[in-house]
Length: 162
Image (tube, rainbow, N blue to C red; front, side, top):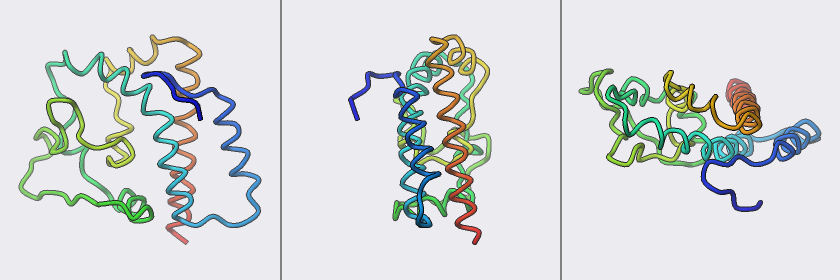
């Protein structure tokens, strides 16, 4: 895949190719394969989100990144375990309203795919406005990628539940 500049998303045809590959697959997928696809889907959406968090978040007076959003649920752990990735355990002495333990002076210390899903899907109003006000084609592509990300996550959850 070609290198993308910061904030760009890949062309929509990549998404269509990925969906076609998934739908045409004759053999059942393993949890690990779906987890890899889920991780790759994060890589598709992350540049666009990072572009906007770098614009919106530094000037924010009320930090949205609170510990409540940084707590893993069983589905997050199933995804990380399927990848053989390091898992982070909740710290019981932290209040839900404390700043997220993964937040540092440069933003989140975790790659987007390593974060709890609720964290990656939380968009405050200023961030949503920034995303929506970007180039209309980029925004539509971003929304398609988010929908794809959610569909891959659902396949992973379905596989984990079987």
